[in-house]
Structures are given as structure tokens and as C-alpha cells.
Image 1 (cartoon, helix red, strand yellow):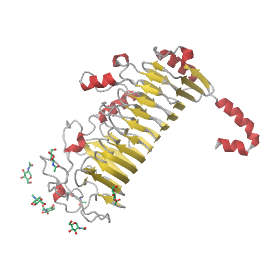
Image 2 (spheres, rainbow, N blue to C red):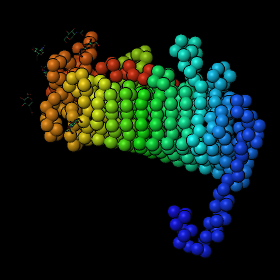
Image 3 (cartoon, rainbow, N blue to C red):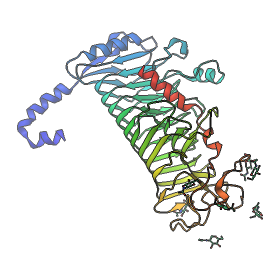
Image 4 (cartoon, protein in one colour):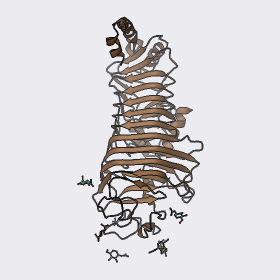
Length: 463
Ligand SMILES: *[C@@H]1O[C@H](CO)[C@@H](O)[C@H](O)[C@H]1NC(C)=O
Ligand SMILES: *[C@@H]1O[C@H](CO)[C@@H](O)[C@H](O)[C@H]1NC(C)=O
Ligand SMILES: *[C@@H]1O[C@H](CO)[C@@H](O)[C@H](O)[C@H]1NC(C)=O
Ligand SMILES: *[C@@H]1O[C@H](CO)[C@@H](O)[C@H](O)[C@H]1NC(C)=O
Ligand SMILES: *[C@@H]1O[C@H](CO)[C@@H](O)[C@H](O)[C@H]1NC(C)=O
Ligand SMILES: *[C@@H]1O[C@H](CO)[C@@H](O)[C@H](O)[C@H]1NC(C)=O
Ligand SMILES: *[C@@H]1O[C@H](CO)[C@@H](O)[C@H](O)[C@H]1NC(C)=O
């Protein structure tokens, strides 16, 4: 728009040139501050940042090509003008976590307005040893997040890679107006708690065209995530795209206004998910929409789980979640499932889900008839559902006379869920939609402890 303005109004041209010159940021190359490839560059990066931050015109910290080891970095504002980091090379964390602070992210960027991070480079969290020690129970659960973006306003993070984080890759906390685009996170399927992008207590977040390969949720949106758009995400390996978990703590803020669109999930443990802890304090998640999502070999492609309790150590499984879920849409969701229950809407008995809409879906399971489970929810159906969802054979013109979690061909056990040891399920007595609580406990087996990890990462960052 600015360019058009300059073209249309020649008199303004001079001004535009002037501003472009001004906009040519002063650069602060870390090698001018003593950074050397292969040598500890913590101080050099910190010093370059401090100098840039006091610049009264726009400034840019440049990390050139090469690998620069750094321990914890805390790059803080407020700064005097817009500031950026151009990461062309690689910043590398210590392989030995004892050389890092555990309560801080490896790299924290915080309290900055008008911030840009780009350059095509890599944050290498060097987490391989940490994962194996965690798995051997020699290290505690909480480990450093690669990148903590805390309390940023008007920020763009683009064209960077987060590699092998020790914990979450990117944690967005307390931000207003932040765009993360063309970001890649990479860690192996089995790396614990390496969520791709976690968001909490932030308003106006865009996550666009990101490729998230990791060992936990590709994207997770914690409490206080508001006005979040996810578009063009490619997720897998990983645990899927998740709202929550919610309801682990008191005074959580509502999740409101989430649109996840035009994304693909491949081989993930879950698809698109909303999860809330059972026996939770009061909370709220509303206005959440999943549209045009392609699934390939995904477990639980569509899932609301209000009985989340990954460690199975919850005091009372019979005390329902008090997180109220409303106005949720699943539309245009297609592909293949690795689990039989392709739609699982297990809502709270005390706070049933309201305003849930299921549009066109077409999900197949290659081990038999796909099924659905619906508890404490009566979704509005529009378009075609394959399989039919939450009704008997009367569902809206899908021409599909198969299961709605009840009539699964070749399996006359309860509910379509192969739930050995539990014969309470209401699937066989399908009088209307008001089934008994047939949630299988399998649902909550996914994504162990990732909720507490999120919480700890958030509180870590906020403390
Ligand atoms: C569902 O998907 C399958 C496989 O792609 C396709 O053959 C079938 O026509 C689709 N059904 C509907 C109703 O879209
Ligand atoms: C459902 O399938 C059964 C047997 O396959 C058939 O007899 C019945 O007419 C079908 N009902 C509908 C509504 O298509
Ligand atoms: C299970 O289904 C089979 C075949 O449809 C039927 O013969 C059998 O009686 C059923 N068993 C029960 C307990 O409903
Ligand atoms: C039910 O689950 C058990 C154990 O997971 C499995 O061995 C069995 O094959 C399953 N049956 C069906 C019908 O899926
Ligand atoms: C299954 O249900 C029947 C009838 O409700 C009951 O008698 C039986 O004890 C139940 N079995 C289990 C394992 O819960
Ligand atoms: C199904 O449930 C209804 C209402 O709870 C009950 O009246 C009916 O007897 C049940 N039918 C069967 C077959 O269990
Ligand atoms: C569902 O069943 C419960 C108890 O069985 C009842 O209180 C509730 O009103 C029913 N809801 C609907 C929509 O039928």
C-alpha cells in the first residue's frame, strides 16, 4: 500500500525515499561484538542486542552464516525503535542441559514492540541427550523451551527453523498481534514434550504455512488464546493440533476465536482436538472452528475430550470437567484414520457442549467400519457425514447407513469402542441421542502429560 501511495503522489516521493532510507535498519553484526563460529557467543549476541535496542532508528541484529554456540539468551525490550533479528546461520544450545537455566527458555525474546525475526537460519536446541535422560527418568519433566516469545506486541517471526528442542520449540506467551509464518519445527516422533508452537494468553496470533514435525502437539493453544488463525499447517509426526489442555489450574482465561483452516495432518496421534481435564475448575472455550483439514492415517481425527487425564491418576473420574465448550465447528474434514472411532465428542456431563456443528466429513478407517461417539452433545449436522455422526441411520442424506457409534457392522459390542472391561456404554441402546457416558478410557491415553508441560512452560515463562 505504501508503494502505491508513493507512485500515485509524486510529491510524496521524496518523503518516501527519506523514510525508506530511515527504514534501512542499522545493522548490528554479532561478529563485530566478538562472536566466533564454534566459540561461546552468548555475550556477543547479548551485546549486539543491547546496542541495537538503544538505537533510535530501526535496527537489526545480524547473525551471519555459521554455527554459534550460545547458552541462555535473554533479549529484552523495551527498545527505542523497531528491532529485528536476522538469523542467517545457526545458534546452537549446549548439549548438556546442566549448562542452561532450567526455568528459562533457552532463548527468551521479551517485552518488545515492533519486532521481526527472520533470515532462514536455525535454532538448534541440541536436545537429543536431554530426551534420552528424560526417558530414563534421570531428568525432571520440565526442560528449556527453544524459543520463548513473551509479551511481544506487533511481531513477525518468519522463515526460521527450530531444531531438536529440549522441550517445546516455540512458546508464545502474553503477545498481542504476532504472526508466525513459514516456520519449521523439527524433532523426532519419539522426542518427549517437543510441542511445535504453543500459545497462551495471547491475542491476535497468526500461524501461517508452518511445517511442524515433532514428538508432541504440532500446535497447542492454552488458556487465554484469543483470535488465533492457523492456516496451511503441515503437521506430522506429532500429536495433532490441540486446544488445551484446559482446566488444570484455577483462574484460567477463556479460549475464544480460533480458526484452523486448510491444514494437513499426517500420521499423527490425534487430529484436531479440544481437551479439558476432568474434575476441573470453571473455564470456557468457545468459537473454535476447524475447516478444510486433510488427514492421513491420523488417530482420533476429530476429538473433544473432556475427560482428559493422561496419567490416569485423577482423583475422581466421575467428577466432570467444568470447562464449558460452545460454538465449535468441524467442516470439510477428510481422509484416513488409524483408529476406528473417527469422531469422538465426549463432553462434560455438567457442562454439555453447545453449538457444535459438524459439516461435511469423510473419514475412513481401514480396519473396519468407522464409528463415532457422542456424549453430552447434540451437534447440528450440515452437509454429508461419512460415517454418520451422533445419530442412527437417519442422518442427513449421507446415504450412509452405517454406524453412529452404535451399529458397527461385524461388531455387536457396545458403542463401537472396543472397550473391554467396560460394558456401561450406551451405544447398543441408541434411543435418540441421549446416550450414556460411553467415552472410552482410551481417549485420554494420548499425549501423556503434555498438559502439565504446557502449564509449566507458561508459568515458567511468566515467572
Ligand atoms: C469419501 O471419500 C472416499 C475416498 O476418498 C470417496 O471415494 C467417497 O466418494 C467419498 N464420499 C463422499 C460422500 O464424499
Ligand atoms: C440400512 O441398511 C439395512 C441393511 O443393510 C437396510 O435394510 C436398511 O433399509 C437401510 N436403511 C437405510 C435408511 O438406508
Ligand atoms: C452379534 O452379532 C451376530 C451377527 O450379527 C449375531 O449372530 C449375534 O447374535 C450377536 N450377538 C449379540 C450378543 O447380540
Ligand atoms: C479389541 O481390543 C482387543 C485388545 O486391544 C483386541 O485384541 C481385539 O482384537 C479388539 N477387537 C476388535 C473387534 O476390535
Ligand atoms: C455388565 O453389565 C451387566 C448388566 O448391566 C452386569 O450384570 C455386569 O456385571 C457387567 N459387567 C461388568 C464387567 O461390568
Ligand atoms: C433403552 O433405554 C430406554 C430408556 O433408558 C429403556 O426404556 C429401554 O428399556 C432400553 N432398551 C434396551 C433394549 O435396553
Ligand atoms: C439425557 O438424559 C439425562 C439423564 O438420563 C436427562 O437428565 C437429560 O434431560 C437427557 N437429555 C436429553 C436431551 O434427552
